Image 1: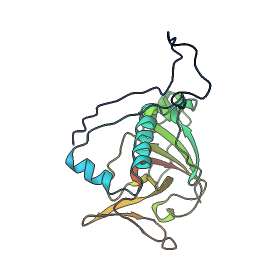
Image 2: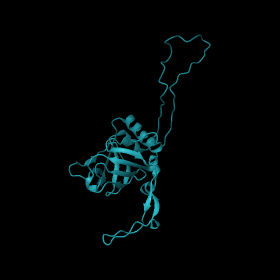
Image 3: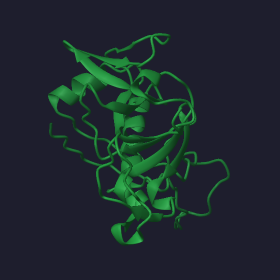
Image 4: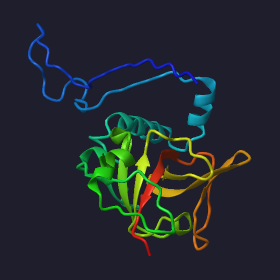
Length: 226
């Protein structure tokens, strides 16, 4: 879809102008307007205009869309609020860690000696988990709605926000009505559904007009073995 935007910009600042008709009378003239506001107007195509018209609060909807776009560009300045699913850490802010790596297959049979440093090479663990650190977050999960997807309370998930088209088998971080959640996203006909991996939680139908977006896809899960 093509969106043509024409901006009409007003800084809402009234300048004091000198006039040859005498001094300014107190209370005269137009009232002063706010100095930190700008007015914008734009043309939208047919599909976009219909969707905007379907929103109950068009102005707030447009502002929310702009915030999502600004967040995508300036993610360092406007971090998403993941408080509903856990604590998040941008991968770029996490210090790299190099550990010995043995590139051999381990079988559940006869033991293989792993005490020979000559057989090991150093790898950056964070670099292996986050090949795109500028678009990755590490989130410590709170809650058990995805336990059947092997994501437990307290686990750390690696989320790549450059991936926003998950398959039905990938766990996605989704923004729904201003909150973030981790769920499977599935389409059923023309409807979208958020599917938990725990039968104790309900499925959520994405209705027309709902504020919803795929924020990223879970690429790795880090947790302690049972």
